[in-house]
Length: 221
Image (cartoon, rainbow, N blue to C red; front, side):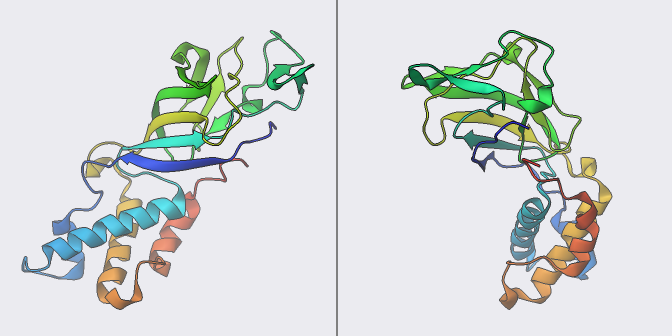
């Protein structure tokens, strides 16, 4: 397995709808009037965010930006003599290589698409052509790997030198989200509604019992 870089991820494009509507949540809460619609809407957002953090899953299609300090390094790589800033594969231009060796695992699932891969080199921002990497949307978490005959570029050695913009989620409407996840969110909304003074630091056991079987594996496992 390649040496994996530090990474971070931030939501950059929010979902256009929530997996659970206010009307649906009100049925579970047994609320008939509209006086608390805004509060319930806020609780739905909080429940969705908590469930995403707990599972590593995006439910409605959401845009993210992942930052890495560098691309993964192969175990059989070395730095060029006299130039410690350039990493040179020992096995150059020898394919096939196992793509999982250099795979970058995406921190939100299910992966839908990758919009761009940019990196800093010589103080400039460069874009890696999509023809030079492959996108695996079947595996969870989804992966990026160099295309056959390609290697990851060598970015400047500094924090957040690589940026990957991607989309994850089950679709753009609530009915594309698996029912069990929508139910888990309803339970979370109910717990937050019934105990507003308890804060939003933890999910209820009923929600966790539904989600525990669908937590995405460690990003660099």
